[in-house]
Amino acid sequence: MSTNWQRRAATRPKAVEAAKLVLLFALTVAGVLLTWAVLPERPALWPGILLSALACAALHRRRSHPLQAFAVTLLCTMGLGAVGYLLTPGVMGPLLVAQYATSVRTPRRTTWNSALTAAAGMVGAGLFGRAFHGSVILVVVNPAAWVLLSAAFGSYIRVRREYAAARAEHAAREREEEARHRVIQERMRIARELHDVVAHHLTLADAQAATAAHLSRTHPEQAFDIIGRLPETTAAALRELKATVGLLREDTDTADLAPAPGLRQLPELVDACSAAGLEVTVAVEGQSRRLTPVLDLTAYRIIQEALTNVTKHAATRTAQVRLSYTPHYLTLTVSNDTAPDRPAAAPGPGGGFGLLGMRERATAVGGTLHAGRRPQGGFEVSCALPLDGHSGGHPDSDDDSHDHSHDEGPAT
Image 1 (cartoon, helix red, strand yellow):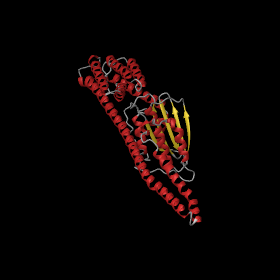
Image 2 (cartoon, one colour; image 1 turned 90 degrees about the horizontal axis):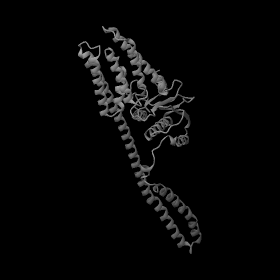
Image 3 (tube, one colour; image 1 turned 180 degrees about the horizontal axis):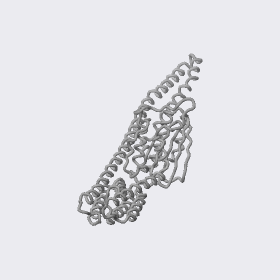
Image 4 (tube, one colour; image 1 turned 90 degrees about the vertical axis):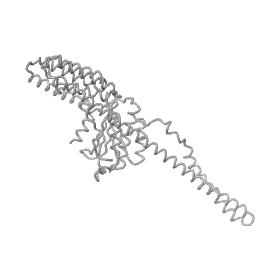
């Protein structure tokens, strides 16, 4: 049930975002009503609800314009304090969410400048608001502490995501270096075989020619027989020479000049899967958009790894790839059905690092990835990647405060 819900949430980011903002508005209004009920001098109720609605609406832009959303929520929260409301965590909910989003998406210096500004605003609203009755801890220290705590938590998540991105990049670089080293070793082995095999054929051909010349006067029949077998020897030498030199002719450093793969290579990937016996169908929904190089590479690698897992582990020989473009997200879905004669086999926990690598790639660009068995059978990998170009933003996090980099699925 949980996997099914997560898959639906990943494919409907707009609906999930709207539900989260409505829920946050309800919690904020509940905090306003509770504060209004307990204060001896009750402030006007409608300004509190209006300012709460404005603050929650501003959070819709927290991913694309975090500082602007933070400024609006800060002014609304200070307005609540000036009207006479006690600034509790419930009343300050939109500000805390905006502060967290700002801390996740902005540099360290900007994060703490905004946090100190918000803390000063909370102190001013508490001291000069009508809710101040001499309790410094309740109306001054408590709001400022919550703002600083939200900023610290956002900074911690930003550092974790930067570390995950660096780790994924380092792992990819190590794999590329290891692959290049293996290629060089293989070419050295081919060079040794070039000497051993081709030289053998040429030496044999030279010996056959010399023997035929020696027997041409005394035993012409044997000489003709040797000459008749000579083309076979030279042909074998030419085949060995052509195959070996063809490999050695490739430039060792061409990988450094080749462009990084992306979704434009998806047809070639589908053809390669077809050659391996896996029939892949691709469906594109929405208007295609030009992706950044990092996002393009991430989308391609996730699809490539998912199809590789289907080839290695699935009992079926078909797979479906769906790319769904929305104004702010690219959703990738790779699924396969269960073979009619036997259920799909999934490796046990710890069987590999395929899902971990895909999840780290998605997390590094601010996306989410969910994988698991489908209710109707088979396996599905669903990934939502943000198209706004803001690294570190989770498209399905409530207030961007949840890190999904350790959500485990079946290992592949």
